[in-house]
Length: 248
Length: 286
Ligand SMILES: Nc1ncnc2c1ncn2[C@@H]1O[C@H](COP(=O)(O)OP(=O)(O)OP(=O)(O)O)[C@@H](O)[C@H]1O
Ligand SMILES: [Mg+2]
Image 1: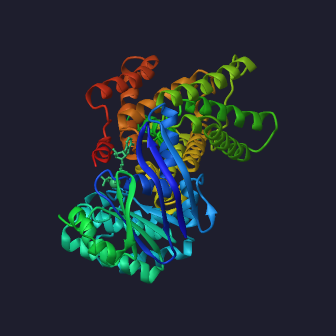
Image 2: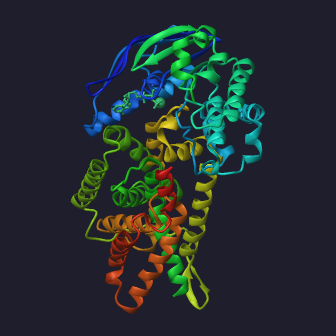
């Protein structure tokens, strides 16, 4: 479904992603495990196309030079130079790191803003579906998103991505800052999303323990380089992974 | 005076709404706004006087033409320099200078141009005679504010406006293209300016120089109100509107524009984010 081929990303002369090739097949949940500054966000922003926008803005300002090499393809189509909003139309939707929601709008309005690409008659049903997947959001639907807790904002952010009807959903550290119990609930919701919505999922995390049991395959990323690749179980039993990513 | 202050305030608010909309959504400070206001007046005047078109048709045509012009201005020029505030200001102000001075050159000066009122006549309110055009302005301004609220809360494009205003990258990752939205906000902002011109200009005459005054008034109302906040614009319009009427009554009507400039300086010194700018601060902190 998604192919990343020999991707390299430079911020000025610093290498953030190094010759990275990964693949995601339809229906899978694929994990990218990596610690801080491994390059997870950079990878997600490259796949979603946000990095092209950042690069353009930096270029205009005469700021940081961002260089991208390599190819991306999605459903057989080369998307290396396709702009982010077009990629969303193709079905790639990113839920960004630190769940940035629209803080001045209430929960329901956030979902309605997110329904930009959805045909009008499907909006109501989809919003109801988001509340079914995240029942905790329903009583909060009139509350401003800025006044939600981190966990609630994370659910909302994922719900917003769902409103764009993704084929491939990219989740950038969805467990960041959540309590263990909340993490478990969120992971369950992610499994539900794949089952009920038929969405393929690529998830980045530094907490490997809750994530590894639900993924089909996983990649381990260190300093922008791929160090390990295997099924969820293989990685779960790998002593190196245990040593590096299981302690909390 | 109570009544005149009210009307003056409402006029200020109506003048500023378009500028405020564009800035609030896309962050573009459109310094061509005053020129667009005057050009809209002259387009309408030309259509009515030279082509003999009906008043309402001319007005609608001017609003549409100006709106399209705003969108093109964004697509051709502003898109390339988006985010570079100084460049945006210079580029739009250059457009303003060209447009206004061109009008002067063509000869839209020297004798008096004015637009017809919609309904003639006047009524007495609280002891003051107010012409119907002024009451119409009051009604239409309320209508515009309500329409803008409904638009930004209940239509797809309007909701996308709110998304872009709050977080561009989150919007982009949901499929909302910032350039598309910014060009719409520029178009609608300019159309609002044209609308304001068409209902306000009949109160006086159309002069090239008032293009600069309109820009200054719109700027001061927006800065005092907290850039990008519609509610702030309304409150600031009342403060500046009444201050202008007081100045005109007790000192001299020549100084009314000074009130706007002083208001900008005072607010920048005391509370740079404007009266209702705190929401923006919150947003930046989060
Ligand atoms: N805009 C930028 N300019 C310069 N360097 C950057 C920029 N963004 C990221 N980097 C660098 O690129 C590397 C990868 O960063 P990235 O944000 O992708 O890591 P991450 O895996 O998402 O980390 P975290 O878990 O902390 O979110 C880091 O060394 C970081 O300092
Ligand atoms: Mg990150």
